Image (tube, rainbow, N blue to C red; front, side, top):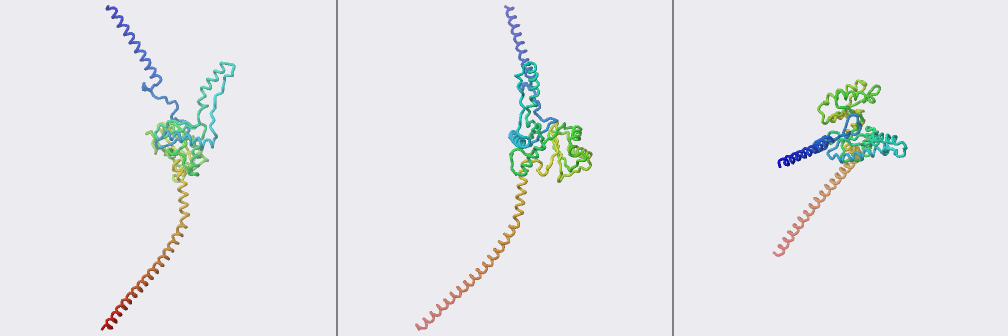
Length: 347
């Protein structure tokens, strides 16, 4: 009896150990593949802003999903005008090949290069900051594209977005460390500021979720770098020819050199659509001022004429009233005389 009880106890312990090992294996598999149940980190896989990318930086006031939809629609509309409709390269069919090994080799090569071949010209990525979107561009000049959008909005005065605030091109990006930024900008700024090229400029710096990049230090270093490229480059904060845009988000520094920064209201789509309309209305008001002045003078003359006529009417009314009063007096006097004559006759 004791032997049977001992065997049952040993078998139950063995089953329990096997069950625990299976559960541990499942937990290890979840941790290995980063399952959310195991508290693993989410796989990012190039879905966020990284150094070396080009694109468009877009700011909005909440409603990031709607902002992304508007950005895709707006960028594709003007990209079709500048570069034509988007065309995706499809992988070639290798089923007709007689050599099986060659066909397999081609399939492997196509698999590795399919990401590059099928890459869309616009891809939304995580910027690393709230209310800020980054749209990565592929085979497109972001500076030319954004400038054409703002130029059209400025001339037509048509607002084509409700959520998008600012739209800044990112022509280059690097790590957001002081030395890395200066090294990158030394070659990046040469097409605009290296002798014999020169221009008036301003530096616009913005930092988000980064405490290591000091604004004054970065601006002074960039200004010194531009001066070394060509001493004829001058700082102009009122009406510069070029604007150097520095946008730091976490550990990435986004850079661009743009024109018409003041004219296009700091590349704010909402303000650009309002600007020309206000200017046109102000000009129209100025043009209407002489007509308004002449009209007012005419009204003043008419008012004076009416006042003179009114004074004449009042004088005539007073004269008529005096005549009426005199008539009443005469009538009263006549009535009194008749009564006296009657009394004399009676006597």
